[in-house]
Length: 328
Ligand SMILES: Cc1cc2nc3c(=O)[nH]c(=O)nc-3n(C[C@H](O)[C@H](O)[C@H](O)COP(=O)(O)O)c2cc1C
Image 1: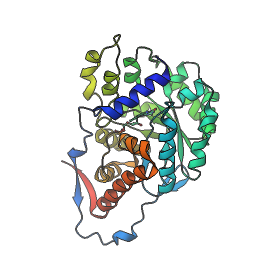
Image 2: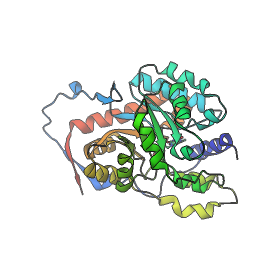
Image 3: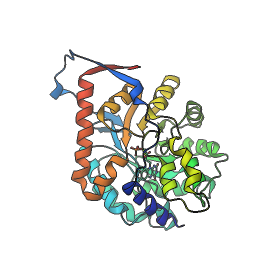
């Protein structure tokens, strides 16, 4: 199956079926401590956050989606416009298809729509084992004048795809070499199954300073791959993995406690501003959301902004009225 058809199948699965993980993101196990006397003026609170040499308005990012479907330009344009209007970062979905088809220049419109915000380029880390080198990665960054490059780690997803790229051998050494002199920060990211403390430690040893843990509890690639499965690896084979992964809250809490120097992005099932507040108190520098923005992005930028504003209002309210988080 071509990369384009696979992406189209995925998009349809996301839009038309339940692709939510069978386990929760874990935030219900943490409680915010109510603050009845905040001694602050709610309307004067400042939420500006430093991210990739920018001051973004809130610790919230549009997480990676899409990549090379016919609808992707419409989706990316609306996401980029919303991110620019809200002064929030925007992470692209995998740019692999554009590199394969030598059409990276068609992505120029993204930087044109969003000239002032951090933009993150994106590719599967495993591609480093399939012939791509620093040169190709630099092209991805240049195509959108990106402020960082996300390398996503998706071994389970690749295993479920009959034509998946499943040789992850020796990747950490290649990433170490890359980190030594890459011109923008490299963010290591999962795609919805979470990153363990030991994996985070390997990544940190290789020179990675930003990790997007993309934990379990939100969109599940096992569910998507089951919906789009063929005969070779059947839906029945994949189904038991519907609850696979480490919950987002657990990843953030554990990695931050062991490695407070690593900059963490919390994503994977973050569904409101209260969970954002919990993630930030547990150690995340910012949060990311993907699927709640997909349907709105098919409409227009205003629909995306409506969702982002809801998260932000809830987050502001939760910050104003909570002082700490405790494990229940
Ligand atoms: C339609 C769609 C496409 C995605 N494509 C990518 C991708 O190309 N690269 C990547 O790193 N993550 C990709 N993801 C994963 C998301 O960035 C995110 O980690 C995951 O969906 C969990 O967040 P959520 O629960 O808020 O959706 C995709 C997610 C969705 C919904």
